[in-house]
Image (cartoon, rainbow, N blue to C red; front, top):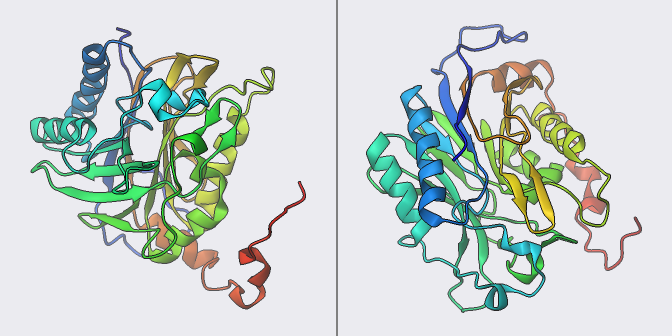
Length: 317
């Protein structure tokens, strides 16, 4: 197994818009970038080593990649039965059990992602969770937006998270307020805005993104990074994007996991092709500093936005 590279940002960056002393302590957060290993024990041990390393550096929360224990089975359009993708119970399934065991061992909260079983037995959900050291499932959010492109046939496996109820729930970790969207949700400014309006400080995106089978010479990594960082700027949020790396079927995942702040600064970033652990301190009150200077939320014009929520049968590219 490849040796883990530790990429750590110690201390917080200055907050250029600050006018008062911060009221909250920084949140030290970790993220583990790994390739999928066909041997389940080897795969779990690679993730476990990353969690232990981040915890040893003082992280209070460690974040893991999309479909944490699985291969990225959505490369195949055949669907779950044909590829042997098994949805999991929550709580109690293997991903929850792994996260709970690692949280108990290390004393930190563990964020993970899984294929959640639906009660009706149909297509399941792509779900992100956070588990506390005592085994409590303190957060669960189902992916809202489902990609339907070559190599990413997620519509054959997942139903979208429900729009009714609370599609943008917050998870409290001490004084920090976390949002748990997933991968394809990264591209939608509405998601980051909704979480920001709810008061989120940090958005965590478990991710599986890489090459485009129909466009092998098109590297989307720079666009992916820019849109996430920009959504953080527009909404005053820290962004944690934890991608997988390595080759699976027709895809080569491009890693590049990173953590950015509300000012658009990338605090730490992993390489494209190596396993890595990111650790950074998040000055949570930078959210308020920035949004006070640039009050995007209070100067919105929702009375002019009706066309944004029209259900149009056809949209012209």
